[in-house]
Image (cartoon, rainbow, N blue to C red; front, side, top):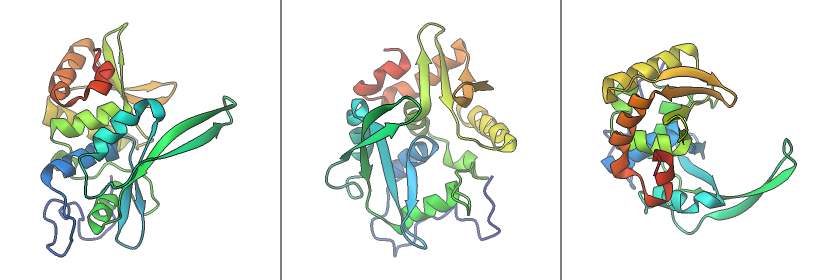
Length: 219
């Protein structure tokens, strides 16, 4: 878990200094927590500033725009379409990238969720940060999968430490009354939700899921 030996930065996004111009509202902060836990990359653009980078396949263009629309003052213009060659499969894949404007507030979020070496971490105050179903929904839509055959869901995770894995499962139990199991699969570590737990997970997030992502909850 992050600990840079400095005054804790986690309070900044929730009690933003008045000098920061494009201050985020509460919904934006909740969505951003989910995006950072998922696929978003918070790219540093200076000592204190950063921007949000979103990348998705062309098939998920509507989903990318759904997320960006929460931040109209940060995401302006249109996404860029890029091609990337995958050496493993010998194929070129097209994807879309959307980058936000840079701001010190986004920079504050980077200091929360990344260590000094640029590695994503689970903050020590995760109980306070990941506490809304909307955050959980965005995180799941980014990194979660629903398997119709066994009616179970997974959320794939970065390479966190064992301590961070344990802490994250405790946060899920405390804030959402969910008790996923940590499991190692071919694509890496994931949180595994049983059939019953998957039902509870879907019940929590389904009010927020856009039509273009209903397949991730079995619809």
